[in-house]
Structures are given as structure tokens and as C-alpha cells.
Length: 137
Image (cartoon, rainbow, N blue to C red):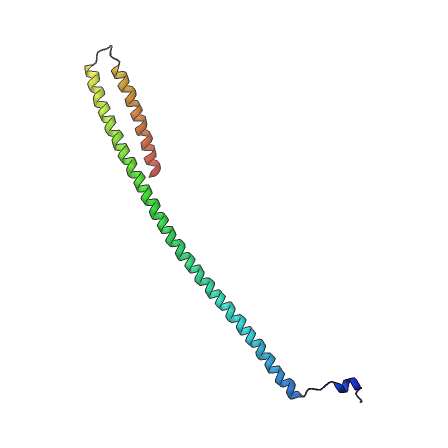
């Protein structure tokens, strides 16, 4: 079999040269696969670390928010308790005054009607405060 002129110009590689190029290509692919695996592993570990940091930060922020909400709630609750105690003392003093006025008043006095209307207003306010306290509980 005779080779043409163009075929004779192409250098033929020996088996040894092909064998030498084969392992280098294999090592090249192994290197890239290991490099990609290491990069993927590093990205996964880094994302887990970031996730843990975010979770810790959210827990800390939530604790601070809850503490401030609790402090605000306690303050409002205490204010309402004080306000209710004041209203209760006002109701008690109005009751005493009304009783005294009833004992001292004659049939023509209009003072007792004024006291009754004031007392009913105070009682309405007291009931409203009690509803607010129930809502806070």
C-alpha cells in the first residue's frame, strides 16, 4: 500500500508519544474535577456558616424586641392600674359625698342630681378602664 504525498507529510506519532499525552490529559481532568469539588464544598460550608450567623443575629434581635415589648407592656399595664386605682378612689369619695348630700339635702335641692351624673360618668370611665385592662391581660 502506497501512501500519497499528502499522507506522507503528516508526521505519525509513535505509541509512546500518544501514551505520554494520555496521562497528562487524564491528570488535567482529575485536577479540574478536584478543583470543582473543593470549590463546591467551600461554597457549601461558607453558606452554612452564613446561615448560622443570620440565625444567631435574628435570635438576638428577637430577644431584644421581646424585651422592649414586655417593658412597654408592663409600663402601660402599671399606668392603667394606677389610673384605675385613682378612679376607684374618686368613685369612693363621690359615693361618700353623695351619701352625705342625700342625708343633708332637702327635697328641693338639685345637688344630688349633679352628684349622680358625675358618679355615673366616673363609673363609665372605670368600666372602660377595666375593659382596657382585660385587653392587656
